[in-house]
Image (cartoon, rainbow over all chains, first blue to last red; front, side):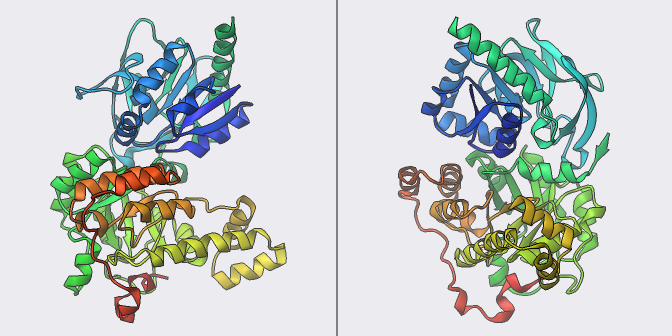
Length: 195
Length: 293
């Protein structure tokens, strides 16, 4: 089983390390041809405007939608969450529009408001240390989206079938449980695709 | 809930990796930079080459410029404070600037002491030209580093020298025994614990960008090839013939720094880059890299 990390811009190496620690083979992905050999992909944190532009420039917009159509899992963290969303609050355009949710960028404020905290997540036994950096929020979700975590009454992690998204950065800590959760999603999806 | 932790400050720089941070002097340039795919902008009154040309004392930008830039872009906004200028840094922090560059490009306010950056909620980036400077800045609280290079020259040679030196020194300390490491810490003038951490991990504990002389897409790609985590472009964009094209091309060359056909493609018909200065033509007093050791 092989999981890619979209390597156009952002914290790629940290995700690769975390995925490997969670027992998966992980590779950096820079071209759409490299998607073929993957069972799942992570869209990392970075600057969503930069990643959004490069996704379009190099044909990833259509290629990742097709990837998702095959039932292969995608996991977006921070900027990656914005890239997955159907709608971005206050903007006319969105990126992949795969997950039925409305997200707000920089929802906590500027860098000085960035923080870390212990956060309970549905499906993971004890709270994980969550690092929020100029983080986005999920303002609304469709009925097909399961809310996995809430912080101060706001949604910060969610799942829609084979799609997973969180506002924070699980790749910046040594706690690999959320990556392990995603690796399990990829395993399940790979089994059902072969069937 | 905790703000301003080392993880939050260093993590912010991790999110900039593989990206290009561009110097801008007004809101209009900031918008051009954001549209071209910059991961952050550095709001300045003058780019380094103009600071060089103007001479005199270079200080923190007029807060109006910083504010206007913050208003028009959604990407992070950085700004420069003079080395050791505690108040310029506090002023920028109070304005909500996302990252402060304690920068040798400005005239130092203190020739001995750097700012004690651990005391701030806002993260800092600092320049370094060798491992000693790099680790001293980290000890003071810098959450991100960049090569000093020689700002405003459009000449990549000093940035190359600094990055090669730092990476070579890291490889060297990886092979030292414990007693040799104690001595090396003394020679470099750095805390032993920090040096040990570098020796064990084979890398700096914070992100290290290239800066000071990047003028073309190939320059940016060269620095990535040599192991930079990303690139600062100062005068190179808005002192070139066609800033929009240069900005876009440098972003693409940084992402695909090993794709030489792509770099050739994006380098076509860019017009004239900034003129540039031969380093040996600079007087000792004009060398910004010798400030803040």
